[in-house]
Amino acid sequence: MKKTSLFSTSLLVARVLSGCTSQKPNAPDQLNQQSVMALNWFQQSGEYQALAYQAFNFATLAFDKAPSLTGKPKAVIVDLDETMIDNSAYSAWQVKANQPFADKSRSRWTQARQAIAVPGAVNFANYVNSHGGTMFYVSNRDGKDATATADNLKRLGFTGVNEKTLRLKTDSSNKQARFDAIRSEGYNVVLYIGDNLNDYGAATYHQGNAQRRAFVNQNSRLFGTQFIILPNPLYGDWESGLGEGYNQLTPERKLQTREANLKAWNGK
Image (cartoon, rainbow, N blue to C red; front, side, top):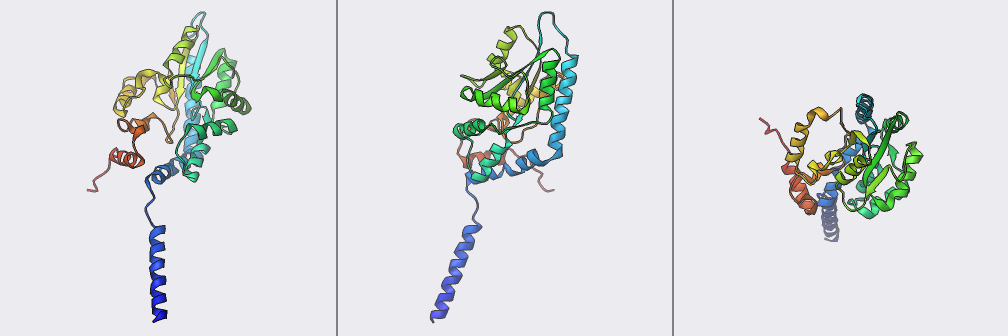
């Protein structure tokens, strides 16, 4: 009787433990896990490298072909994160540590100065600076991280990084005022490079994806000539554009919104 009881108890415990291990991950876990394939592609694929090189090859041609204006030196405005430097190690840390994005942890990553260069970015930046142009690094990194950001860029070989050319966020993530300031200083801005449509001006700022796609359609001829886009499947305003108030949603609602935005085959 005791043996039977002990066996039954053991079987029950095994079933309970089995159920625990196969339990569906909670919503925050799922949000992070959904980034894994994007990270694999971003960090491991030759295709990502090819797209980055392609972007900067087009950028070099566009810079050379852009007309010069008397008394106005050429300038190129670039974003930093996932445009000129690769922070995917931070995103991978989020997955492995099961942590959401947070300003505090992102700042720790920035202070570590471990971002690497996007393929082709250093050569392009230095080409512009050595061929009569000026590179402006306009990023929404926090202003308090300016020294660490400049150190990281210089260690990677980027030239012309200084207080004038490095313009981080102060009061707003809308970059339009910083773009306008560069123009008002007498520069002929011939090229904008980024991984987010907001890197080309205020037109798509805080807009939904329908409006963002409309902007692209309306300006299709500028891509490859005045606007250069880098691939970033990891994060961006395209995600917040999935639904109104997306950033304020619970993890459960974010998962629902992501799934609701899928255009799926019906199987027939």
